Picture 1 (cartoon, rainbow, N blue to C red):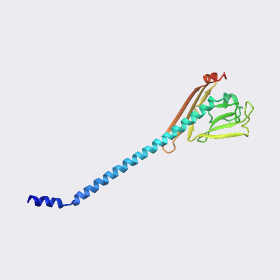
Picture 2: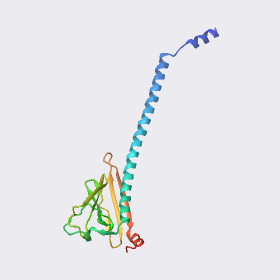
Picture 3: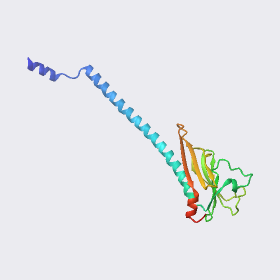
Length: 190
């Protein structure tokens, strides 16, 4: 009789309840795996976007910094421009390079784009920007540069650039402080 029962249990298949439970557990595991994949994919995209903003902002600061280091002279816009010249939304200084074709450079916020504007002039005061001029976009999604300043008495230049991710509203701030006196003394421009 014992052999008969063992034989009966061997020939027996899955019951309907066992099959439904197995399919349900398999579906649950697939849904869990898909949820984990979806979450990691979304987080990876968010990290990539944030990394791009940080990289672009740091690039803009370094670009401006390198141009300042290679300058012959840094001049405050207050002292350099005619009184009637409007220079709002700028970083507040001119970079003068004596050995460059476009020898006067400044940075202006044009909408939401920080733009490098360069022009060629032989005068100390540009007359409403001469015709030979170059504009280069440096950084997009910029909403504020007003905290940037140039302190000519202390030869201190502070760059503050703020950007905003339009998709999620995250804000990023980039700041660089340059003490120009030491740099100018090294190059013999004091």
